[in-house]
Amino acid sequence: MIDKKVVLITDKNEKINHADISNRNLEGNNAISTKTISEAIMSISKEFELITDVSKFLNSIYDYKDDIIFPMKYGHNSPDSKSILPGICEGGHLKYVGGDDYAHIICNDKYTAKLFAREFGIKTAPSILFRKPVDFNSINEALHVLTPPFVIKPNFGGGSTGISNHNVCFDYASATELLIKLYTFHKMPILVEEYILGEEVELILVGNNQKILFSEEVQLIMDKKDFFDSEIWGFETKKIDDSNIDFRMSSLISQKDITKIHNLFKAFDKIEFMRVDGRMYNGEFHLIELSPDCYLGDDCAFYYAFNSKGYSLSQMFEFLITNSLSHYQL
Image (tube, rainbow, N blue to C red; front, side):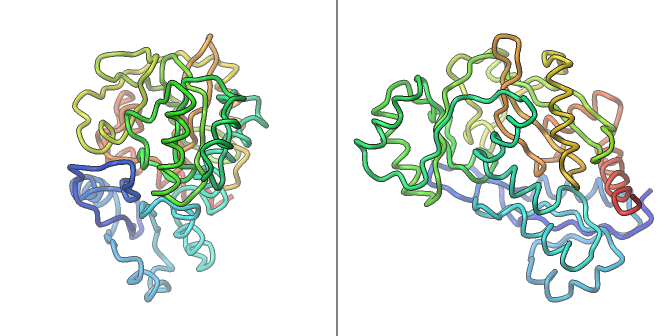
C-alpha cells in the first residue's frame, strides 16, 4: 500500500473509432483505460485524485506538495508534449513517477533517440530526417542513399500518430509523396527509415540509474504472424481495433544486446520505467523506439509482462510507484 495520495494527470480522450494520418491527437488514455488505471491505483494508495485539466493542477500546484504525481498526459504530438508535466513537477519540487523532462525530450524525438542508442552499441535502421521537406525532386534525390522499402513517420509523438498500416513505401516516388503529405499535416520533421524485416519485440524495464529491477521480453503477434516482412503496427490496429493483436513472452534478444539496453536505461538520471521496441534481424536487436511514456493499461505489452510474472494491474502500479519513491531517497 502506498501511504500517500497519488494524483493521476491524464488525457480526457474518448475512444477513437476513426482516424487518418492527419490526426495529431491519437495518443493518450481513453475513458475506458483511464477508468481501469484509476481503479488500479486507487486500490493501492491511501488517497487518489484524477485530473484531466492541467490548468486546474497548475492553479493549485502547491496543494500537491506532499503527494505523488503520476503524469500520463500526452496531447497533440509535439517536441515537448511528454516533458511538460515532468518539468512542472521538477520546477515545483513535487514527487512524480516516471522519466524526467530530459528523458522524455530525448525519447520523444525518434531521430535523437536512435543517435543516443548508438552510443551504447544498439543497432538502428539506416535513416534520414527531413526537417522541411517541400520540394519533390530534392527529397526524391536525397532518399536514394537509402534502400526501399521505407517506413515514413512524424519525428515526434507516439501511439502511432501519423503512422498508418500503409506507411510502408516500396519505391522512392511514393515515399516522397507520403513524406510531403505528413509534413503538411504535422508541421514537424519527418523520419524516413529503411524497413527492417523480422520479429518485433518489446523489452519491458523498471529500475533506476543504479540497477534494473524488472526486465522481461514480450513479442508482438499481429494477424497471427510473428515475423513481419512488410507490416508495421499502425494506428488502425493500435488505436481503433486491436482484436488482431496479441503478445507472448519471448527470449529472442541476446544477452549482449540486453546489457546494452540496460546500460542505456541506467544512463538517464530519472527514467524508472520504459518500453524498448525493436525488430530482430540476423539475430541482432534493431531499435524502433524508446518509450518512457508507454501505455500502462491492462491490454498492453507492459502489463502482459508483469501479469506473466503473477502481478495484478494494481500490484504493477504499486511496484512502479514504490520504485519511483526510491529516487527521492537516493
